[in-house]
Length: 396
Image (spheres, rainbow, N blue to C red):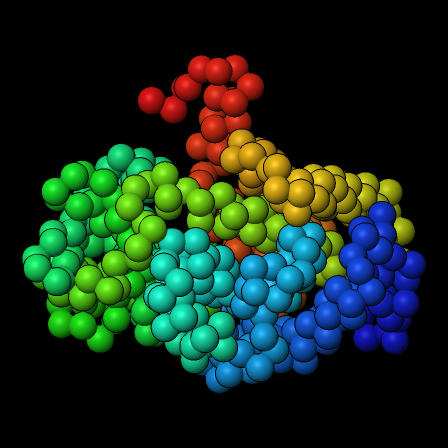
């Protein structure tokens, strides 16, 4: 890149909010978003690439995130779903790995406790969960069960007096190498229904090993979990987690969070690509002076705005309590497809510099692949939407 003093942040629309969506937030929410954005710029963005390159999670960041008090903004703090979505997009914009850490702990793990635990269980567990004094993970996906895990859960739970005995394996479990607790979904051998359990990761028979050699979200500590006759007290069976239908109450919400991640990653791609285009000199002028480069930038922006617009409306439906599962599925499928296109265009603008993490875009480009696949693949979410509009299931 050139050594000129040009500052791309002074350009119009420097924040990427081309249609002023943030103005839909309340003043309090806008102030809170600005506070989080400043924190991310100071604490996360400067270390994100280095952590990604090393495949290590910045553990010293957790207490700082705890002090920032980000967990359960809607359910506990009373913010709107629109604010929560924009917040998650902003964290992803800074680093998709940290956003995924928060998505696992807050959306999947904490969401499971809030949706499926009894009041007594919530009172016992949630204070430390909200403050990040206890880190959680979410154990649903299995080595042989991804998209079909609803009917193909192989991990079992057997009632034994006042305890449950868990056996099986889970895969791709984020945070699991260092989490204090993990919610494990296991099939009850007595009634063949999937039930939820809060498992202490120090229990005998529980083990978690890091999945190595990832090309995406390398900072996230995904693990293979093995459960070998793990004994869980009956109090740690989530009182209201008694079928996969109950599990879907959690997944519906977290699918929205991943769609917001797709928005945030497109914002990140736009940030890097535009700054590079106005600073990088070729043929005696900035890349941004070439029509084809402007076309690529506008396409990234258009994809981002379209994705944001869909998510804004869906957040409004969530706030009104009328959003449907198929609407979440369409959002996840659509926004991640646009994201994939946007990050590819961004990588192209950077040319050779787009394949090294030094410039940020290679990390963004690679992280998109995980977001495209988790919380329901593009194909499965497409078929969920297709079933809703035709009345015919093409999944099985």
